Length: 258
Image (tube, rainbow, N blue to C red; front, side):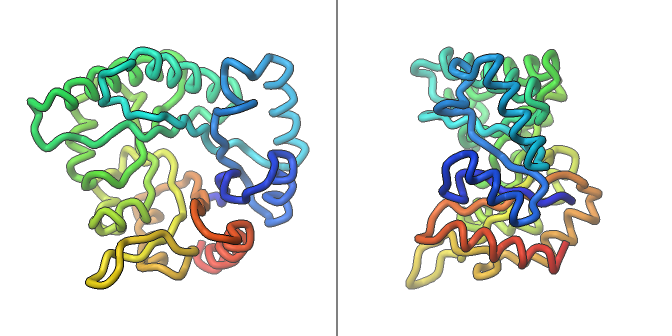
């Protein structure tokens, strides 16, 4: 398993973030296809410069994130979102990551639910597009169990759909982050290293620095290894007053386990 970081977690400008990732000895970075890196703004020259910057820092691109204001289960103005995801998937292939991460929406409990039909149609189109361009669309975990997501993805006749497994998201939504790995064994193409505390009688579930929460990291990483996962473990820190220091501490913590 290779260690990386979501560049946004460092809270730094792009070039400085790359330098910090290199200083920490990380092998890769995940970036969002937004702002100057949005597909409709990144020129061919910009793509070449980005690849050169990554090489010069000794870093690989682990995945492209595709931020959406609404999920792929929301019918209003859906086509522009699908087009946007397609653009990011194509860019991900060009830049060498070949994985695009998206929060698609919750898998419905009722197959007849209208939003479920919308989600299936959206993902069917995007999975088939991924087959053509050579990019996997990785759905962020957390809103449903591993078994539910496995069963849902099993309905698609495409290899272009996978999973970005986030243990903190699973835990904060009441799912065991270790037990839910096995059902998704053949679907996990990218993982996040993010920690959280469970909801308790006097507290809500919340993200915390890695190693300070309720994720059993030895069991989590051991289970990934047993499932023969050989991909990226990417540190993510979305909250906190000193995220860059939390990331640095997370690198040291994970190095003792990986």
